[in-house]
Structure formats: C-alpha cells, structure tokens
Length: 327
Image (tube, rainbow, N blue to C red; front, side):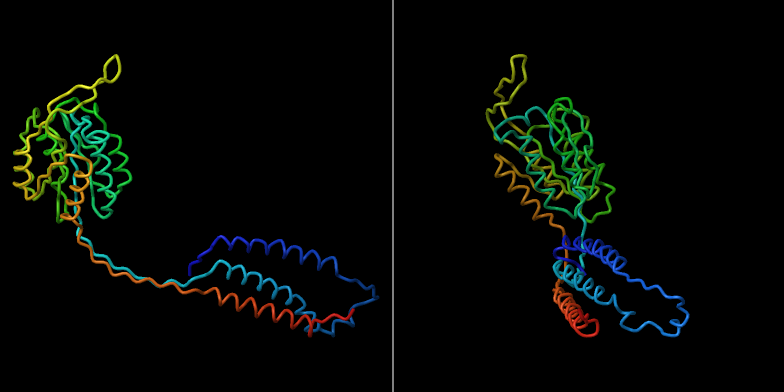
C-alpha cells in the first residue's frame, strides 16, 4: 500500500497528547469512599460497564486515526515490469586542440560539442559511456560507466589547455579502442569529434581504425566546424585578442576511418547540425529493449472513511445507551 498524501500521517502524532490528557483526567476524576473493610466487596466482581468504561475513548481514538489515514489517501498498487536490454558501450573521443576554440559554433566549437554530447548521454540511460580526450597527447577522462551524472561532470570539466596543443587523432582513437576492446557488450562504438588533421602522435589514425575493426568496434567520426577563415580567441597580456586562421580538417581520413569500421562520417557546420548528428547516431545505435509494463492504482481511502464512521457511530450509540450518565 502507498499513500498519495503521506504528509497527513504526521497528524497521528496528535493522538499521543490526547491519550495523556485522557489518562490525566481519569486520575483526577477518581472518587474515594472510606469504609472499615473491603473484604465483603471482593465477592462482587466489577460490572461490565466498569470494565469497558474506556471503550468510548478507544472508539473515538480509532475514529481519529482512521480519518487521518483516509486523508493520506492510501492506494493499492499492482504493477509488474519486464525489461530485456542489449547493452551498448560507447567511448566518446573529444578533440581539445586550440582550434576547438573557434567561434563558428556558439559559443565555440568545444563548448557546443560538450553541450550536445551531454544531451546525447542523458538520452541513453542504459548504456555504459566513457570519455577520452586528446590534443598532443591523450588520456582517459572517464572510463566506461553507467553513472552518467559523474560522466557529465567530468565532461564539463574539460577545457582547452588541459593538454599541450596539437591534434593526435590516432593516439586518441588508440586510447579509446584500448578502453573498449575488452568490453563484453554486443555492440561497441567510438564517437570521434575533431576539427583538424592529425599532426602529431606515434599512431596514424587509419592504423588505430584497423585495430578498432579487429576488436569489432565501430567508429562514428564528426568533423566539426566550417571551412575557411575563422576567428580564434588568443589570450594576451592586453586581454583576449582574436586571430584569424584557416579552418580545415582531413575529411577524407575521417571518412576512411568510419568506412573501415562500419561507422559513418558527419560534418557539423553549426550547432543545429551537430545536434542532428548526435540524434542520428542515437537512432543508429539504439539499445534494443523489450518492455512490458502494467500499473494500476486503486483508491483505498473509503475503507478507512467507513471505519471512522462506524467507530463514531458506535461511540455515540454507547454514550447514549450503555454508558449514559444521568446528571
């Protein structure tokens, strides 16, 4: 049984002082009679009226408790649910190079990527998801986890300057593959988001893709940003200055990585397009789930309301008949 308004149950505590008050009043109302001996009275047992003289108070107390429980609206709940899922493990691989600060996406490429990726994570509560970041080097920001609140906090904490500048795409991919390769999930996916070309690191991106294919890992690649001249904020002693740079990324390499592993390549030129890309990936890699759910709630307050009526009726009846007092 559950209660729709459980806060009303605290009113039952009011019955405690009522009981103390009743006991106190009964003690004060006791009468006394002086007699020489009470032995002769022992053969006369107390009448039933004396034995049950407290029943009126008990009935009133039970009526109060029943009314309070009725106000809390008890409900009977019958429900069952079966769920079968096919787990998907996802490693998100994010570029933290300097060009990710370009403002062709709002407020910039990195913050836009973080915001949309967080929405993607929240939409997949049944999946293990982790995060690898890279620039000149690569490290695991969060291993595969089902605790998405922790993952999003770690996701939001990444920023430009966390790693020395550069774009080691192959190293980032290799790190992600290493984190996901031993997964027991039936589906293993890497989502790579970058805005540049591989320009450092000891592992070529295509080599990392071949390793991923060996372990049955699909890679979805996202080239983020527009081509051409973009403004990139640069901190200087005089404050933040904007520097114009040529935006380009190796789309052919990203396409080859996706095709080799059975994934797909995307180009996100604005925030709306980036959100659509993640929605598309979400549909392609949707967790298979079979749910049968039944839920029914039935109000039970009328039972306690009826009990309260019965207790009050009995109290009134007994007070005016069996326990009637003559002034």
